[in-house]
Amino acid sequence: MIISQTLREARKTEEVWEKTIREEERPLFHLTARTGWMNDPNGFCCYGGKYHMFYQYNPYSSYWDSMHWGHAVSSDLLHWEFLPAALAPDETYDYNGCFSGSAIEMPDGQMLLMYTGVRLEHGKDGRPMEVQTQNIAIGDGIDFEKYQGNPVIDEKQLPEGGSRNDFRDPKIMRASDGSYLALIANRPEDGSGQILAYSSTDCLHWTYKGKLAENHCRFGRMWECPDFFFLDGSWVLLTSPQDMLPQGFEYHNGNGTLCLIGDYDEAACRFDEKHDQAIDYGIDFYAPQTVLMPDGRRVMIGWLQNWDAIAIREKSDPWAGQMSIPRELSIRDGRLWQWPLRELEDHRGPLIEHCGQEISGVTRLEGIRGRVLDMELTLHVAENEEGFHRFAMWFAEDEEFHTGISYRPHEKTLKIDRKFSGSRRAIIHQRRAKAYPKNDELKLRIVLDRFSVEIFVNGGEQVMSAALFTPLSADGISFRCDGKAVIDVRCWELER
Ligand code: FRU
Image (cartoon, rainbow, N blue to C red; front, side, top):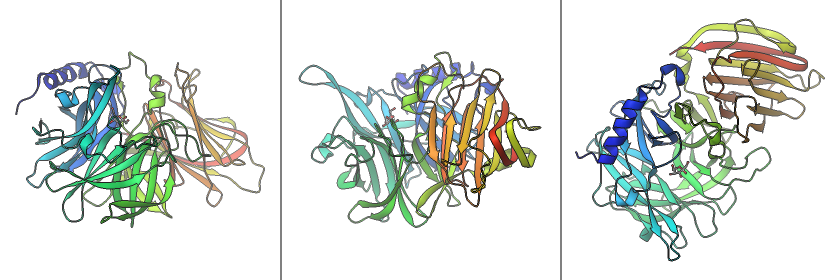
């Protein structure tokens, strides 16, 4: 197989630069860019007995530019090993970037990648314009050859009014009759988003089938990075809308995440949505993809970062961009629930437990500190008592820094605040979500992995995620209350 000069250079760069990044500078379980910059998960799949995760990648600097596909594999979704970069922008149709896409195993055992190629064209007024097309690369799970007949889907196969500038992120999947379906995000005339469906019997020749779903300007504008799957009796469409407007506590502004749950009429190629919700209620989570584990679990990983907050990174940081912890998905009472991959619990060290602990003022608990841990926190919230107005837990804390989660029972709001996490940028540092105690208890599971926090509320009904770049020496944890609160804490340090 011929490897282009552009890809060879990227592979050489990552191999050399990677050596300058110490293991302690990365999280333990969260995949980071091998070198340089990472955004969306791409081609997340199970192939040859391993999980493959590709990602939007600029190996040359900690900024978004010149998109390649980075590559890592794992046998347990928790420990990742880097493989050489898989795709580089080296053809006329993808010269300005190999954007997001997906992967599938072909009947002959080869792995097929479907991705968006970006090229620049000059309009009549001389201004450059991006043109996005869908392309194929086929390989053995390490090296991939771009298909001679690329692009396989281009503007000629767009429905009327569909934009050729915003036409990207193909999700490839099998239809029930064994043929292939590609779901592609596109901007229609109303300026918002729609998910187009294409079908094929060989993944090389595609026919436009129709619009799987349409935004009609309800949830943000353009929808990016679709994923679509059957789970617990319903069909689930995940997408990441740009330019969201907040709707109460359900959605926040900027780049958001959207989960639609409903029915799918395969013959008509139409998704009928019944319920909508945010996927993540925190600051940093975007463009998730899912994989079906051999035992039937549907697991999701997202980019643990947000376009509106990327300035939080410093130029000198060794890597830029990390993925979330793998999350097992389920549908309960018509909503999407998430829970950390259960195997994470196998990495728990000795248990440190404080039950029925009264918190008033600032309290530190024996043995509770660290930046890599798994904590179960139960906050007892008696409805009829004037116990307290605000309870908070600060972590990644020292005299200078801290990040906090706080709960106000009267408002039923849970807030994450990383204003003092070490960021020198005036960007979004807080989010609030409604969170309702069950039987007078609010249950939080908090996963810290050096540079991130993920908070699973009430057994996974909601999740709030945030990246933090606080120096690792800030490893204190304190509990704070303006009245009297009672908590139970079970905490484990996580070990590799
Ligand atoms: C989403 C996204 C995709 C695109 C990629 C480019 O984060 O904008 O729509 O393919 O990033 O890196």
